[in-house]
Length: 85
Figure (cartoon, rainbow, N blue to C red):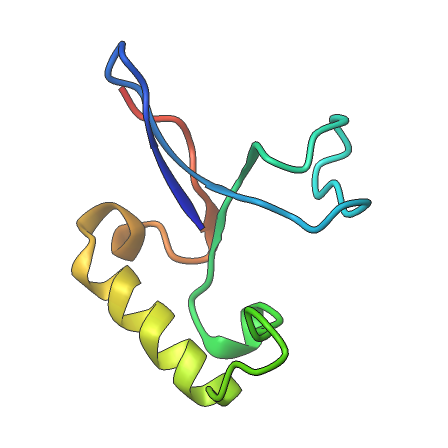
């Protein structure tokens, strides 16, 4: 996940997909708005790297805690993030 702050005050939550995995088919893998899951089963959780010791439950716990602490993310669960100004 990337948190982007632009000079004009626009803020968005975007995802960075792996090469060849353009989530919205716009030709870029670095600018797709993030889906904010309601529950663990809404998304596929994968390790950051092969030696990552975390289980999917641990990864979900960390993500869920991050979503819970952010009022925008928490109030938009089950939706795609949008650009806010």
